[in-house]
Length: 274
Image 1 (tube, rainbow, N blue to C red):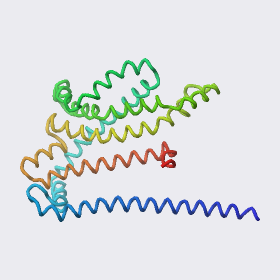
Image 2: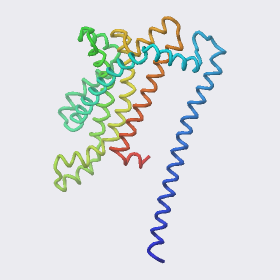
Image 3: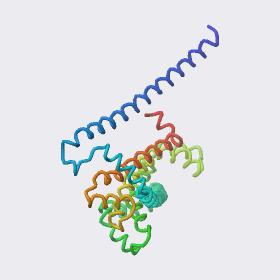
Image 4: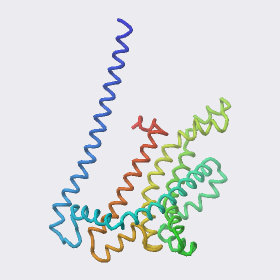
């Protein structure tokens, strides 16, 4: 048998595996698009059977979307909401990862933070929004950004903490046996082991940040997408009311996809395991 035959078989196996992955991805997207299309079609045909003032079909919402774009209302509201969301989420990620690493790695920090985290996480975050608004004197975007950070920080902090605390002790012992430096211990052992927990926390934080964004716009000065929801609900323009709701849902889908793309870059072994 020549040397080229095993190489040819290996190349064929790699090509076959690539084709299987392509078919799987195509099948995944077909299921996703099909499920959304089925819901929209059912909604379109069932909605007219009920009260048309309350339940508007997707076609009416689609027309309302372009109406709000033409008036500029949607762009202005979206820009306002994005400022709050980006600022609050950035604060939540930085503080959550920092405090999660510190409390997961050092026992003293864990014991100091754990009662406070447990207490604040147990209290419904919406109950603290008026207190935040008073603390910032209802001025500017600061109270709304702080509200988004409050809603989003706990999933990141708790998941990061658990990821650091649940690193395989055997791996740590092996690393120490080879006199690994603290920096290499973090980069080679702790961070890769904790990464699935951190990314799971980020995904949870995105959903909570979007909720915090809308809640803050309801309670701390009617602005942004939350204002559009309240405004058009009060005048029974349900088609226009649904436009910001769907925009928020689309923001969640896009941000989740962004996290998955980052996951494929920084933790490719998770993709292979799945």
